[in-house]
Structures are given as structure tokens and as C-alpha cells.
Length: 161
Image (cartoon, rainbow, N blue to C red; front, side, top):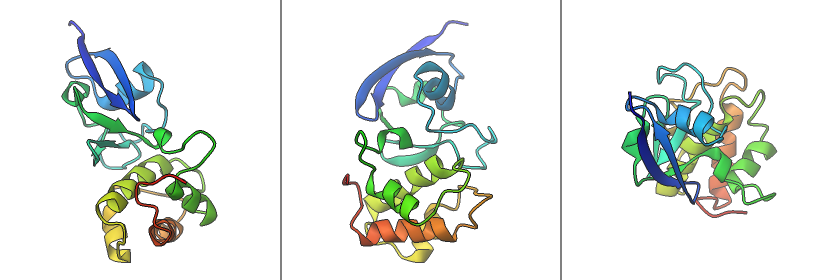
């Protein structure tokens, strides 16, 4: 089967690759482009560790056809920091001990970023809803919720540190 070309902006940079027609975005990002921010978890869209932003909307990259991203803006947790400067959400996760093993962290960060972009001052319930598609087996969620609320209180939104 012939591979198809796909081109999009990944974390602000033009990127291109060749994909199988049924190839998913997660495989293209990790294997094709070397962005290891989104993780492979369940492969079925239930764990959230592969969450990325496609045109600012959270999507599960394991279920997203890579070819459907033609011309779109893709953002991963890998693109949040500005060199050595952490994004305010990343800093809040660190300050609030919101990552233990860290496996769920990229998905949580991208889901939180999408929320704070749309709603810079969310309630606790809105934070819980925004991350509800992301499973964490280590923290018990409370430090993650606290980190997102702390980032919001600090005016994190989409600005960088």
C-alpha cells in the first residue's frame, strides 16, 4: 500500500511525513517525527496519555488518522516549554507535585492547556471534567487538579513563563 504525504505545523514548526492511509497520528509523531511527548498507552482511546491538541482541541492521537491532520496545527507537551523555561502549567505541575511516574503528565498537560485557553479561570469541577479522559494511577488526581487551579490563578492560560 502506498504511503501518503501529510504536512502540518507541529509545535509551531512546519513538519511533513509519509503515512499509511490508516496510520494514526501517534505513530507519526513518535516514530516518524521523534516527538516522544505523547505516550502510547492503551491504543484504544481510553487512557488519555496520547492526548495532543489539534487546532487547539484535545484529541487522542492513537485514534486520530494522521492524514486527517493535513494543514492543521498540532501541539504536544513537548512544545510547551520555551527552551529551558517551563510553561506555567509545567511549572505548576512541578510545584504541586502533580507528577509521580510522569506517564500521564503529557496528556494531562495538553488537556489542561486546552481548558485554560478556553477558560482561564475554571472551577474545580471544570478542571475535573477537562481531565476526565486521562487516567492517572499514581497521584490520586488531587495534586493534578491543584496544579491546574494554581496555574489558572497565576494567569497561565497560553502565555509562557
